[in-house]
Amino acid sequence: MGTNSQLSPEQTAQHVRQSLPADGLFAGHQWRIATRPFLLDKKTVKQLEQLGRVLLKFYQAANMLYHWSAEGRLPAWPSAWLDRGKPQSIIDLQRSKAFRTELPRVIRPDILLTDDGLKITELDSVPGGIGLTAWLNHAYAGAGAEVLGGATGMLENFAGIFGDAANVLWLSPTNPPPTSRR
Image (cartoon, rainbow, N blue to C red; front, side, top):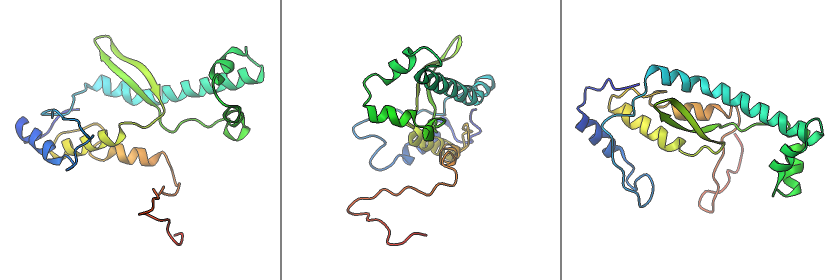
C-alpha cells in the first residue's frame, strides 16, 4: 500500500497535522508526522490478510487444549498453569458449557517486520490502538494516500465483529439512560 496522492510530502504531513484533534491524540505526547503512511509490499499485505484465520485456529486449539486438560482428557498442567492466580468464580465461568467455545472477538498480534519476515511477539485480545489506527487511515486517505483497508476500513471492520448486537451506550451522570428503547 502506498500513496496515490497529488500532494507533496510536505502538504501530506501538513494535512495530517491539521487533522489532529484539538486536544491532541494522547495527553502530554508530541507526535512526529510522517509524509506518507508506512509502506507494505504486496507479499507482506497478503501475509497479514491470511494471518487472522491462522491465529483464530491457534486460539481454538489453545481453548480446546485448556478444556481437555481441565476435564482430565489431557495432562492437568496446562489448565492448572492457566488457572493459577484466578479466583474460583472466574475458573468456573471459563469452564462453563455456556462459554466453552467463546473466544475473543479481537485477536491483536504485536508484529515486528524483520529482514526474515514477520515475527509475532505477543497476542492480545484487547482492542488497543484501533481508534488511533482508524484516525491515521482517515487522515492519510484524506491526503490522497492509499491505505490498507481504506479510510474507514478499521472502524467498519471493528464494528462488524459485533454483528447485529445493539449499540453500547456510555452512561454517566451527564448522559443518563434513555427513557425508552427503540
